[in-house]
Length: 254
Image (cartoon, rainbow, N blue to C red; front, side, top):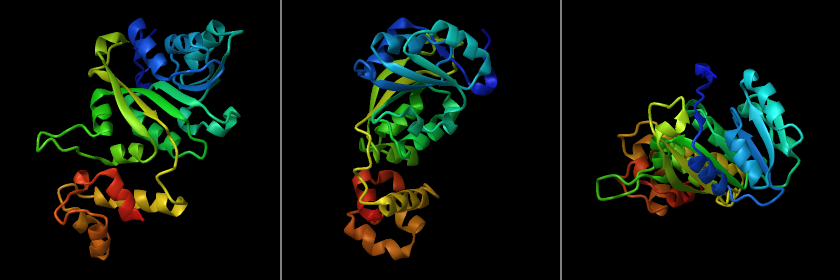
């Protein structure tokens, strides 16, 4: 089957890595799993073997008939549509796990949609570009070995605990992408870091301002009116946005 380039599809074929992704979800029998982009169903099968009740959302209309034939009569529901437009409230399940071998170009959008959703997953397991996974966990810089943050890393860590599980070589996919991938999990997803909806909104407002000009000091990006708040939050005067850990951003936004 040819790849539909507009959808950025690279199907994971290697059984070993498929098993690692499915195992990372820690599925209990009967647990609801929302799968983003099942493609030809290889990961769907691995999830099914671990006892999941799967709701799989596939955007490529050409794959729907084959998926429904393959999983007909099994504990799998195949939905045609865009995962970015899917409302997880339709799952009618108190808890669910989100899993997917996702197109690189919508990685950030998928994290934002589901982590900030009214009905969040309890756990998320995505196959993402290796560089993106490193950025999310705060890949150590060579300078003093410090962790460097980004809008994406802070946005993910604000809702859960990310973990880089395994590098997946490009040869494990068909057709192979140009770069290696990584299995990334985010566990214990909640809004417990935020005191209120207002605090959540202020957090993201300040993070966006803080990274508006990366080479400038944080105090210059967010404005002089936050001088006292920066000091009270324990942020150094010459800190840049990437140098400030999640805990201090949370304090600052309070």
